Image (cartoon, rainbow, N blue to C red; front, top):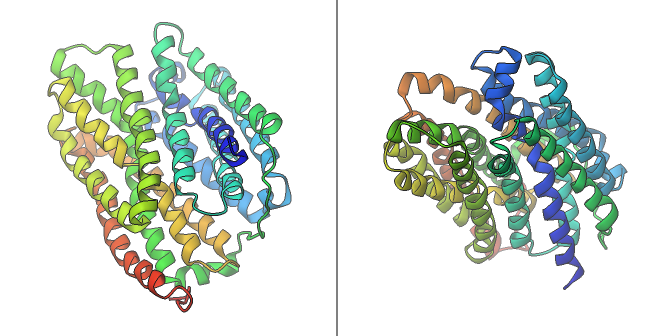
Length: 406
């Protein structure tokens, strides 16, 4: 096995384990809300608080150039270990504010995990990394849904085991990255974040089109991951009158984790074949159609709801890696780091709004229509990527003459 693919396996496994921290509290939300004596709105903020921390951590890391000043493996290992600690402290929290603070801190540490893993992977795969990035996104997706999988085994026990398990997995991920993974054979030029370069990012038309596509993608993605399990529980309950916790955990892991992993790997492979813009347009088209139609399966037989949910799970994530790749293709080297930081931070800020919007709109529209709101993001994203494709075509025809400042 080539060393690069061996490295990919270790990076992906580490990413899978560490990202279990993201939704660990969301899966145990009913128990935490009851423990804290909080209101139902707390459930949304348990999920939204993590991207808040992620944005803060991503911005701080990029601004101070931590991944450029220090070995990325050390950044990953320290971040995963700290994340495990903050996640575990949830067990000792006695109220909403302390719990939310710990979730924000967990999100900040994850900013040292996912972007750092992408950086490490890019050093191992300097060219044709579509499939490799797809596998990494698959690991992220499986990791994000891993608490649902853990719940399959601990649903009959105390909820604390789910929290503890995700913390243990995060510590294991730190050990893999620090003790097993080798340093990549090449290094890249540092491209830290700079406020002064944001103007160049905004003036670069294809870069901003890729950003707009990503923003539409993110409007849908994390809100879908957060609320699809709740929708499945309500739908199954309405159809059968009862819902098994084990069945719900399995269906959630299947439609988010397994479907998402398949979509990520398939999307990375297909992007290398048909082009990233074509892949994003296809993915967002199918994903928006699922968001518009999933409500019609409410209270229908389980297999009907589960089939469409699985398709949605595949295509909601299959294009995720291509937007940052689009930025790196058209951004000049002196501000590509700023452009990527801008894309990621704004994208995750958007998730905070869509995650919190769904429960309010569900009360007004019902489960039958509420997810149609999420279709707005990919539909607008498609329009941006159609325009982006024209720049991609020109670049392929005239690679030596095209200006990155189009």
